[in-house]
Length: 177
Image (cartoon, rainbow, N blue to C red; front, side, top):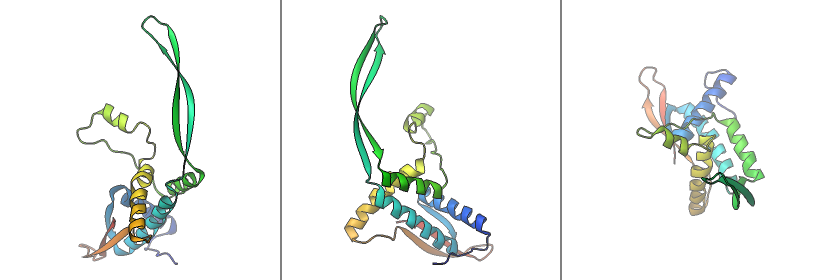
């Protein structure tokens, strides 16, 4: 299937589409022209399908760690603790890397009345918030949708909004279903 050129050079077009796919996956909906919305929809659906097909691939491993601590008198004590580690499997890891190559890295924003300490605690181990959102929120939601309806695809919706004021281009709203 041939790609639309959208009146831009290849590098500019790919950067614009990558930016719009990132915004769509982060915010859930964006407003753009109809032609761009159809291209963004194609790319977003492919990324979501990749995440849906691989989000369950995890490897669990138990590990024993030694924790050293000192009491008030300065005496060092050692304690053995069993820790269960959950890592990505090879399929999920490959999918995660492909998605990371296709979207920009979004930074998590601090909530309006959230303290700095609470924000740091919430985002301490999240290095790629958009990727985590795709695998932890969107993939399970759409996998349930596939099980209920028995078919995949159709994760985005493009709604025409009429001509845009100023240049008359056909405006559209694209959103995740």
